[in-house]
Length: 135
Image 1 (cartoon, rainbow, N blue to C red):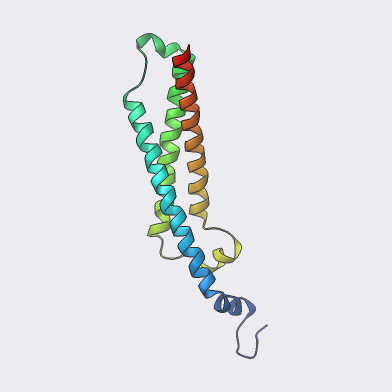
Image 2: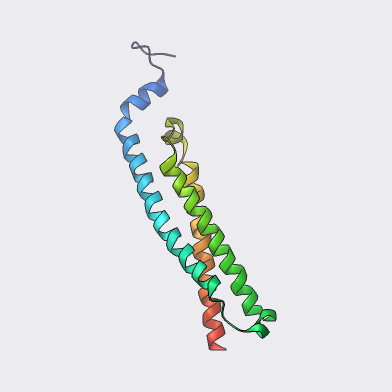
């Protein structure tokens, strides 16, 4: 159906909510920018931890050492993937209007999910180091 100006309901919605759409797009860019900073910090710490692996040759069979390696790898790879996902927000031309109506931009959602996983892996890594030092 079209109104007397020849516009469909979705076109009227886009015209009336143009400023709101711009505000949401700017907020999403801000979220992606902040997420990239945090993901970069996590990737830097995980990379530094991978270069300075604690323990000696006897600790390879130790359970704590295996937990350290696995959680560090998870943190490094998910934070790197999160950086790439957030970066795609800056390199994409524009958010589609249909995404404004239905949900967040998919790369923003994926980036935030990967960032949560990488931060959780870093928390497990820190708990692992604390227990190793305590014992």
